Image (cartoon, rainbow, N blue to C red; front, side, top):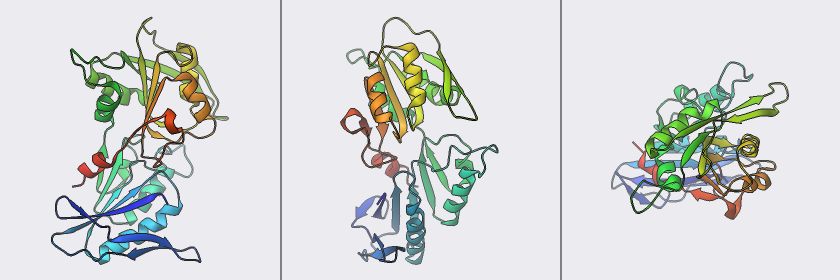
Length: 287
């Protein structure tokens, strides 16, 4: 199960969850009322989704219907937006729009996402709140600049064109220089090549910043052309999918790997990953 349910009474008091997810023997998703929740204030029902398991979508539909029938507000915390990478007309089907239409059909009061791949899919979702990753990277990964506590990195690297704005925001917030990298992708095969990067200083540690790590090919390919294995590069990605050989490749090239618990409750890289929990950030964004 990659959906967790919680209940809030009034402006901030969390109580025993109203609902419990279950599945009938025939396979249908269902929501069971396990706590009537004395109404000492307005009820807010919250569903948190980890990752992009399609089996969770019908469960969310059942949860949204149950919340509406109880007269409660429904808040969907979906930090990783499934389909967000299929966000322009070259994609058939247009995955971002398909998922957005489903989310809108739930008629929830608020959808909270974290560091989406691009602005395209959030623009399709009604009642969306977008949380930027800059503050988390500054506080948990780079550190704040202080006289007695130096920052952990000396520069920020954007691994490709799509990551420039995200990495630049981190560079500005941490008062560090930004270095831009490039790559070439064969559109027919998906193979990556032609990795380049702005020249880096001879000394210092540098953090690569992006939104999603799937198989890790972009990051490993970049690291090979700018550094020796595990020497002075760190990696932050908001959504750690870590598919295929990523678990074996990435720790070779990056001395530190950071991600959040947006995709799975536990990172597939285990103890080799520094996991940043999002619960406080997501709950703080509830309107």
